[in-house]
Image (cartoon, rainbow, N blue to C red; front, side):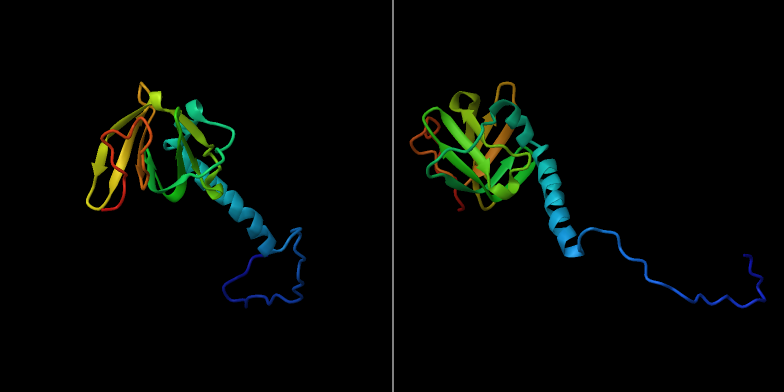
Length: 163
């Protein structure tokens, strides 16, 4: 229906409420959507370094036993603050994330033979133990808050801690 500029706007009457056809409430929907969104974001973060390591060093599950929390860790371009665990043994070391970051981040076991320890890296406030992983280089790990005492990498590397 065309309206001329002279005729008044017709009043809409008789509005009826159309029932919503969603099978769940908005709180139930957000309980589903947010975890899915979180998993996608965490998976995207893994693509900046962890995924390359996982192609070579992924294991089914982290080992049992006491692990060292990593205060701050960097895997190539991704930074992980307080969500990584480090557990060395005679043949290498395990590295994994907390359960909330598992999407795209399988636990890793990296043999000492594939890790080259660079000198401890000092920035303005912190010291990082640096590992170059693989030959050719797959990724660079920078871990703060770990101790390499009792490992083949202990020589020349003090525990990486805040100053």
